[in-house]
Length: 210
Image (spheres, rainbow, N blue to C red):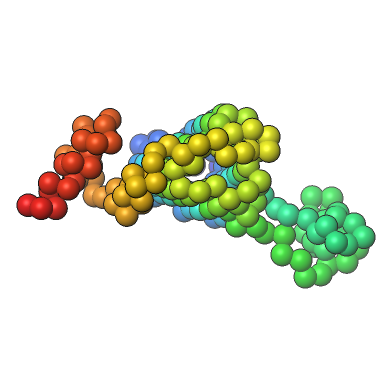
């Protein structure tokens, strides 16, 4: 444990990835922030996204420019509901209890998707298998059990649709534009426009005409 921590400190000293984060089979893009005590297994996190302190994600793809607040829980294993028992002791040979009475076919992995430019408030839980689309916002303390559409705001336990961030025309334009894939040079040039949606669209439209 101590040796592993020392290695993490050395390897991550010039990054925004905490040496106290546990990352297993996880692909990390550039300019990603991983705060202390984060745990990620079999995940991929995109450019300019961050995971807040004590958050966890399993079997999850996280897009670019996502803001994951502290103590969020994303994804996770599923259990069989139509069998005599839901216990891992009856299907998973290697489990936390150390005993398995029968190892059989059950796909306990669920795959969760967090789109681009998504904001999850503090202590949000996203159940395994859920998809949260681009631009969505989830209120603090919410439990997300259903797919969330692009640029939708959801909150509550279970989370419910509150409203959309923009009108449908604006949403479709943003989705078509896919600014989260732009090069750094373009984002630096256009960055000042991100405070005003109308100015942003006006500038992009003018640039296309030129």
